[in-house]
Image 1 (cartoon, rainbow, N blue to C red):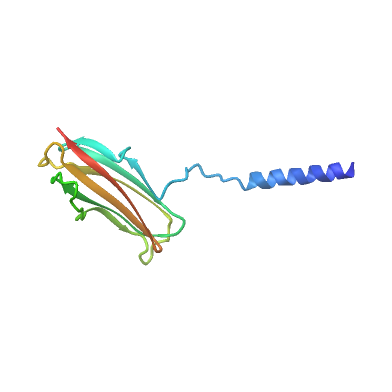
Image 2: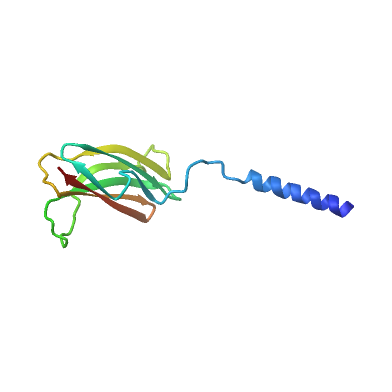
Length: 145
């Protein structure tokens, strides 16, 4: 009987310990860069319209910076080497006075220029650096009439 009582106490302690260690966060585990909006890596947008862009950055170490660069592609050449000369945003997160953080969210938008033709593309490359690691993800907007 004493062994059963001891075994029951150990089981109760184990159950309480496991329940106490349960993660309480409702946040889903994210990949390093999550594109929330647009909801796919290729989206069709009309000239003059604004596409909402929402990005979530997360890692296991403090983020140094996060950025999104873009390039308007009117060449149609599959062998073209993209340089992403324009900046949608750049956020330095390791400056003096900034609390180190391993998460960063960006919400903004991009308005497709009226000068683009049907089928032209706007290519985006989003990047962040955390310690010595650099993460990239790309998506694009195809112009439609």
